[in-house]
Image 1 (tube, rainbow, N blue to C red):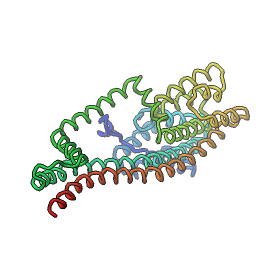
Image 2 (cartoon, one colour; image 1 turned 45 degrees about the vertical axis):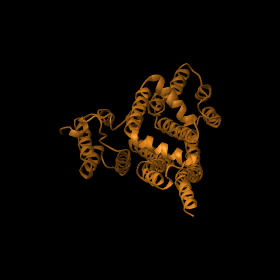
Image 3 (cartoon, rainbow, N blue to C red; image 1 turned 60 degrees about the vertical axis):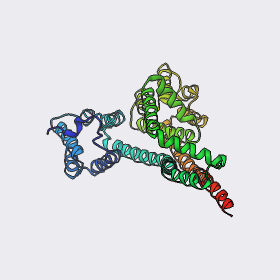
Image 4 (cartoon, one colour; image 1 turned 30 degrees about the vertical axis):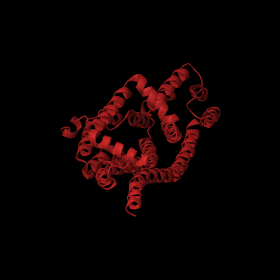
Length: 359
C-alpha cells in the first residue's frame, strides 16, 4: 500500500493523540477478545476515518502479513508511534501479553490526555482574557480617544487638560502613529525568543523558568511529575528494564531541565545507585516523590508505587487548576476594569471642566 501524501509534509501531524488512544484501546479490546492481530488491524483500518492513519494501519498490517513483528512495523512510523509505544509493544510481544500491555498503554494515553486538557484549561482562559483586554485597549486608544481629543480642542479653546487626560491622549497618539512599529517589535521579540529557545542553553533556562515561576510553575511541575510517574510505572509494569525505561521517559518528558535531570539519574542508576537517591540529588522532584519511590524500591513494588504517585499528582493538578481559576478570574476582571476605567475617567474629566465653563 503506498504511503499517504500527508506523511511527507513535515509540519503536519498525521494522527492526533486522541485518535491514537482510541486505536490503542480498540486493538487491545480486539486482542483480548481472541481476534488475531492481523485481522484486528484490518478491521481497524477499514473503520478508520483519518485517511493518513488508515494508510499507516494498512502498512502495519502488510508488515505483519509478511511475517514481521508489530513492534518493528510500528517503529517504521516514528511520527505516530513514539519510543514509549514501540518499546512497550516489544515488551508485550516478548512476554506474550500484548493485549494486556496495549490495555495499559491505552489507559496511559487516556490519562495523559485528561491531564493535558486540565493544564491547558488553566492556561487558555487567562491568555484569552489578556488578548481581549489588549484588543479593547488598542481599539479605545486608536479609534475612540482621538475623537475626544478634537472635541476637547474645540470646546476648551486652549485651556490645559487634566494631567491624566493628557497622558491618555499622548499614549493614544503614540499607539496610533507607531502601531506598525510596535507590531514589528513584538513579532521580532517573539521570533528572537523562539530562536533562543532552540539553543541548548535557552532550552535549559526556559525549562527551569517554566517549572519555577508563579503562578503556573508549580502546576506544570506537578503535571510533569504525574506524567513521569505514569510513564515509568507503565513501562516497568510492562516488562521494560529500568535503564531503557529511564531513557524513554527522559526523551518524552518535554522539559529540558527535567530531561537533563533524568539523564543524570540514568547515569547514576547505571552505576548502581538507587532511583530514589538519584532523583533526590537532582533537586527537581518533590521530596514526597523520592520518598515513595524509595519505599517502592525497598518493597519490590516500584511500578505500583509510581502509579500511586501519578494518581496523587493528577489530583494535585485538579486542585491546582481549580485554585488558579478561582484566583486568576477576579484578578483579570479587576485588571480589565482598571484599564478601561482609567481611560473613561480620563475622558470625562475634561467634560466636567467644559460643563463648569458653560455654567
